[in-house]
Image (cartoon, rainbow, N blue to C red; front, side, top):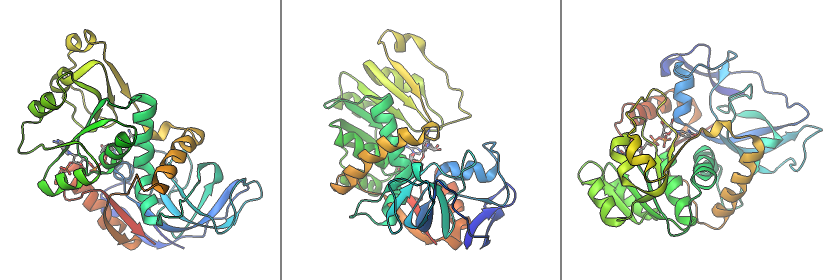
Length: 330
Ligand SMILES: NC(=O)c1ccc[n+]([C@@H]2O[C@H](COP(=O)([O-])OP(=O)(O)OC[C@H]3O[C@@H](n4cnc5c(N)ncnc54)[C@H](OP(=O)(O)O)[C@@H]3O)[C@@H](O)[C@H]2O)c1
């Protein structure tokens, strides 16, 4: 099969596209004919070596996939040949990566694809929608009528956070770095969209939510707590989920007197079981047409190195050239 893989960590140029042996599904695995995968910032950190990971070379990149089951192991329950499925959290903890024509995935990580969704949609939604669900439901405990803030509402995580927070009944504030992206955020349902390059974001948040923000989803890799904690409501919850190297000042006074709480989380810690309950909700919302993938572009899998370059420029070098996910098709 063709696959995008690395034999050492480094710049995007270390990505090879070529032939590797077809995987053989074990008892609990299904063999998937991969229809689509996508790029996440974590892929960049693993490929570059920025995040130390135990990698068996040749290492196939990628966390997410969507496709069709070709074979099922004898111990697989609930899935059959021909089922359309999606998965995230692969390519870690000894599970093989997804950037290939074929992938063998333990059935406990598989989710059925809703009939109205394309493989591209589910690949693009998988990691970010599960992240948004875990953060909003499990840690943020967002309730109807509460105010939620998230930066970058047209981005990978941001676009899922905006939509799922709206589904949960929150009043959603988000930001964008251009007027075109601001329009995308409005299409996704955000109530207040601010251009963070041209508008006074803090003043607009205070105007919209005079009692403060109930749930602040901090997605920036350099959080500024001196700025954001004063914007929280009494008993506000703040979520942090990015910025491994960030060491910001933390203003304790304004935080404790309002009885706020801070939750850090990483979706890759969720077990297959935790993910299944989040995935069930994601599938339901996709089926109902309430949750949609935000895809910037679709490329052939042979252009994985170029996809990594683009994602790196957009997310890490902050050119903002992408509005959503890069999807790749084998
Ligand atoms: N902990 C977890 O479980 C988890 C899961 C997924 C991702 N992550 C992390 O979350 C971060 C975001 O991932 P992603 O996939 O959403 O990346 P992304 O698609 O590149 O989105 C980044 C967003 O940040 C916005 N942004 C950049 N600079 C900004 C600024 N100064 N002010 C306001 N907004 C700004 C961008 O808005 P514009 O494009 O409009 O400029 C963009 O929408 C990454 O660091 C990733 O590693 C963590």
